[in-house]
Image 1 (spheres, rainbow, N blue to C red):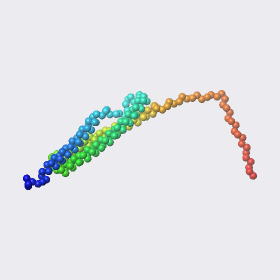
Image 2 (cartoon, rainbow, N blue to C red):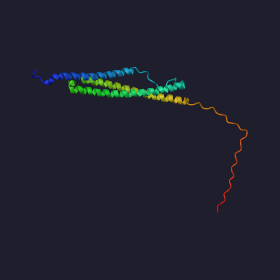
Image 3 (cartoon, one colour):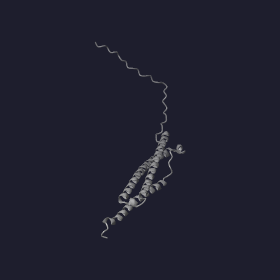
Image 4 (cartoon, rainbow, N blue to C red):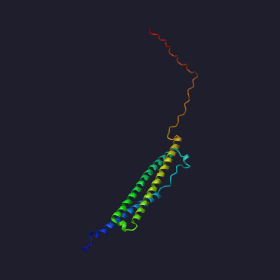
Length: 191
């Protein structure tokens, strides 16, 4: 084939590389979205600010709950930040995948590729944003519960030394007379 253009043989290889790259990016986005959904399903029941048994907790139980709520708030804040960065990465990955497909020519040759990549990226971003909102709510509830438990703990004066027993004042039959004031002689005017 001496008359065939040199680039004609490389075009299918470039197209297949672009398709594989775009497919890999989209698969990564879907895997991230699926992992986020699975992690969200595995979470424990939501925490409430107060429970009916809070008033009957001992000082040790209150102290343990204060520590637990502080830990939950810290972990949830880290999870919220992680989810926000995953949302940003999903947006960036979608953009890279679509631009790669556009510049390779695959976007024009494969119907629906751009729409599929946008849908997958949008789903991953929405899942990450929902997770960030849920974790921010967990932080808020944990901080409020922490404040409530700290108030009950302080109100019961937990962790504070017991007030000393009042000491009986000594009783005197006679009150001693005050000491006489020293006599001061008037100073003579200098003169």
